[in-house]
Length: 83
Image 1 (spheres, rainbow, N blue to C red):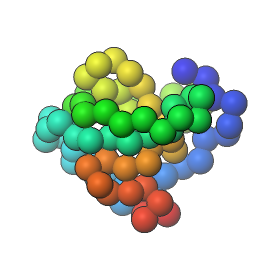
Image 2: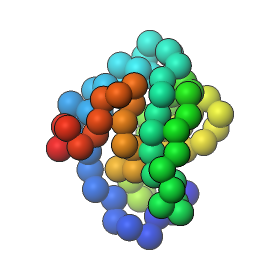
Image 3: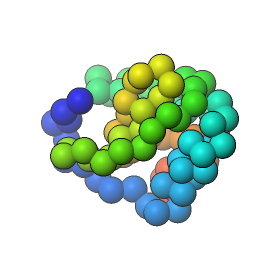
């Protein structure tokens, strides 16, 4: 998924939350801004965290990929609180 907006790295502390959630394989409430700028929520397991040419991505068990800098929160932990 290519993005028009340059990738903005997230904090290591928020990345740690994503890794812990992925490792536990627990269902998490994920709030994010989609490519159209719409805030969306889903309950899903994180199946992979990967670095691609245009940024870092979370892949959900549904197959959907979300760029890290589009994530608003994971289980109530807000990304902006870690910036």
